[in-house]
Amino acid sequence: MKVIILGIDGYIGFPLALRLMDNGIDVYGADNFYTRKRVKEVKSKSAIRINSMDERINKLNNKIKFFKGDVSNPKFVYDLIKDIKPDAIVHLAEQRSAPYSMISLKTANETLEKNIKSTMNIIYAVKDLKKDIHIVKLGSMGEYGTPNIDIPEGSFNVNYNNRSDNLIFPRMGQSWYHLSKVFDTYNLILANKIWNLNVSDVMQGVVYGSRTEEINKYSLPTRFDIDEVYGTVLNRFIAESVMDDPLTVYGEGNQKRTFLSLEDSIYCLNLILNNPPDHEYKVYNQFDEYYSLNYLASKVKEYADEIFNKNVKIDHLKDPRIESENHYYNPINENLKKIGYKRQRSLDDEIPLMLNDLNNNKKRLLSLRNAIKPKTLWK
Ligand code: USQ
Image (cartoon, rainbow, N blue to C red; front, side):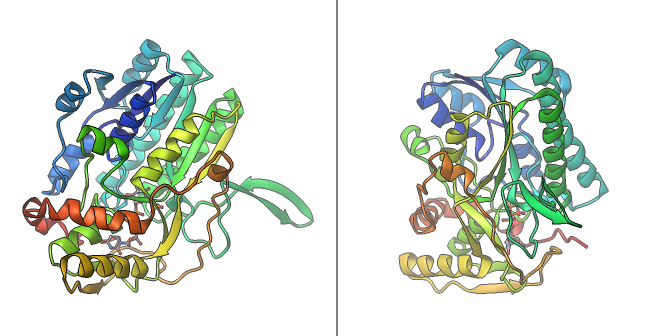
């Protein structure tokens, strides 16, 4: 099998490339190093040192073929797909930060334009060049928002005025970033309807962790962001506890979100690649569990206090985002289980590992302290 990973330099892209390579798949990757550049702009960097793409590929004996380019450029995408004619494309090459999308009109437009364009470029190249390519697209559980009813996988049965239909479940993303993914969803549904493209749309929860089997095997780490723009909540709590800073819970902390470990994310993407849809548009709600932010903070405190003999403080900051701080939450994730998903790594497995990894990088971490405090406000 030949797979192109768009966004191969990222947190998920690189460990996915290692896994697929080890599974005997021909891996091709593209990236424009957008995340490295943007993280530098907020005066941060990966808390764990990562190698350059050249170093990574050298260490892997050139088993992965890399192409530098921007997926929002239609010619780049068309030429890449034309040259390689892959069996599958995993699209991870979108602007991935909700806070970044909320900084200004410029960053909102940049997020919407780049993200929507990149998915459209893939859709058109695939329909023109090789319609049976499996498009695996990274969406977000945040597309759904926090409705006061259960969240199904993509669509649900509705009865209204004595008639019924199976309709796309309402999407109520709470940032321009999440809404860019909502547009992608609609665009992929239409592409499937018109041209029967094979689409797996992956609604992924928040990913945490610093390791996978292959990161250990090759000693090639993936990036680990902890700044207020690109760092996600659990990875940030780990960093804060190692720096002896209070954990930054936004608002009351009763917000619930879905989570999965990096190892589980890679495992799920591999399962999805091995189960291509038959000219369908298929949705996977990709997560292991859902937790409240207060629960996560208490878990990090529990382990950091025990392992390093600390007394970690938990702060409740005024929420910089506009989001419900107390809400019902019950998302369903049956489709991955149907193709064989079982949890690989739990919160209790990963928190101690992350604490140790960041503690080994404490000096580097302390140099990033100014990037931690939330500055990006929704309004
Ligand atoms: N939060 C805190 N403290 C922090 C950082 C965040 O309490 O220091 C809170 C936020 O207010 C929010 C929750 O934690 O309620 C999650 O925030 P996050 O920054 O970890 O995640 P989010 O902005 O939702 O986005 C991340 C990824 C995105 C992915 C998404 C999956 O950046 O690419 O799509 O997680 S999901 O959350 O399911 O939409």
